[in-house]
Length: 170
Image (cartoon, rainbow, N blue to C red; front, side, top):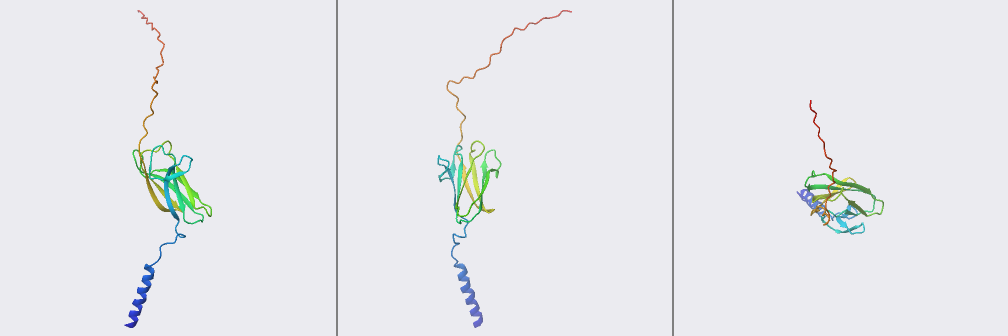
């Protein structure tokens, strides 16, 4: 009986050590933060954002890494719900392999033309492992181009030629 009590005590103490493990140290995490941003006007990312306009080109994605060792970071900008576009269509796909001591990766994405209103997401992979999905929306529409007030379409004039008709009598 004493042996059984000792074994149970040892199991209980060992179990409490396992349950009291500290959080994962930052040295073992792959990244600290990922965010999307509008362009700041100088070609660099501005403040973090999750809502964009069709003319916000490019959309930036910043990945702040935890470790300073070389990793491959990949970004896919994916359609979630956009009128006329099949869901899960990749709009942009790019990757970058960091150099030692590099702790930030800057991506930017642009469609052919302008963004279409709808919902999208940025899928981020580090060394081939999906580490997060970051949704964003594009709101608003681009109105049609307004013609000039004095614009009058001109029709080309066709020269008028009289037609002569001759009838043959047989």
